[in-house]
Image 1 (tube, one colour):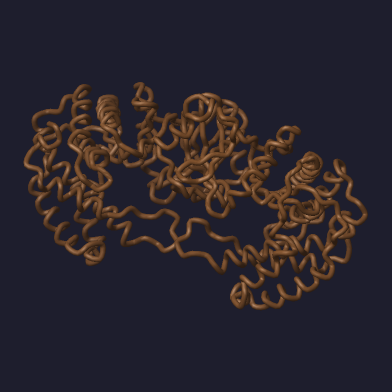
Image 2: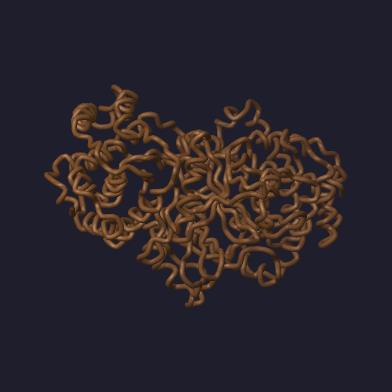
Length: 319
Length: 319
């Protein structure tokens, strides 16, 4: 939920003069996306999203994110397409910040996750992995195994103020994962943040996937492990095996997992839980009083991590 | 900027089943309106606004607000129309709160106010006063002269923590206004909060007026005095006579002011400045650390009030 930059009517008029999108009929800040400012932009040609990239996004990485959306949309994948201005560029500046107009995705994010949502998600995740195979750009995942020790250091001594025992949990887990993290899995372009907020449905069908600003080059199966964490637990953080079974079955109907990927899933799921536990703990400990965005409770991912630690094999996830 | 209530897809589906608006294509919280939660609702029939009425709106007053919008829109005035459900009702409940779907107004709120904005505003304000004349419902203005002593008491001893001298200014001003407040002016339905945020333009023309949740029955000229405060000062709180002249001239081209209304304008302008000074001081002193809505600085209205105190006659406003 983020609208950080105040765009005046004059700023907007000058900006839109660079596009062939007709005149602006409406412009409203919307409560979507945490890292950037997003605006509904209605023109003579319909609805669009105007995104202003705020400080947490590295401008040097924007060509990767916009290029990926363009590539995936060209392959028929249901994601926003960056709109080019008259000069052919889709990335420009507004109010001193990098900005882009992207196409508007219809649909609603699910709140009460049902197995059919997980089925739809599994299918589009695999479609995205297939469609992304030919994408030539690469971006390392700085929030994977190589980045976690740095995050643990950043969370530091404060960890136990989140919950007693968190510090030990983090140190034990990173030691385990550094020993067991797989290196033999197929690598490709992953979304890396495919939470229900970022997936729109119309009825039982996925109508769009948004927010590619964590996308990177990493093991494809790790993306599925992130989704198992994000979609397959109930509101009390209890694992829902039916949801996971729907998700992995639908995924495999498009892209079958290798035996190595299946075998690695419990470790990948632990890693994905640790990744969100670490960033949420950091954001929690560094929250500003009065900040616009309320950080999410990291303890949710402590419970998810403990579940994955208890798993005895990939069958727990329906594999 | 307010999105307070989390509406799930299931809640929304059940709610929308009561309307003939086709299926929901998109639903996004928007950063518009301070008192309520507003959502962009896109259906097969186009864009709408879904408003959830939060705790600062008295549910008993909603029929007045919605009835006024309906009345004005029927007269051809450019404001949202409440959409009726299949049962003919426009006011219903969602997530335990009163809710309504209203039509979507195109246009952009001006940020850099130009004299032509004030011209357009003056014209539509008068049009609204004319169109509202036959509206049969009444709602007393509890934020006018009769309510200010109560607000001064609520601000209390803390006033001088906003700025030294505020307490004396408030007490002197209410004493003056209670002696000089006019009682012989034409009364009708006023908007009472017609700030630039609540007026949309397309080019030089007003395309819509929104947010009728302070509307009430009071002196029509007082509404103009509020607009002089809200539109006719620059960013340093210096009065801009050209803006006021455009506004009052355009207003009078639709509804000429009586001699009594003209003569009362300096006192009405002082009263309007006091009203916003009081509510902003109260909100400032009672702000919550971490609150979603940042209160506006009350000192802006101390400066505006001091300007109006220095005025020697209605000519200062172009009258």
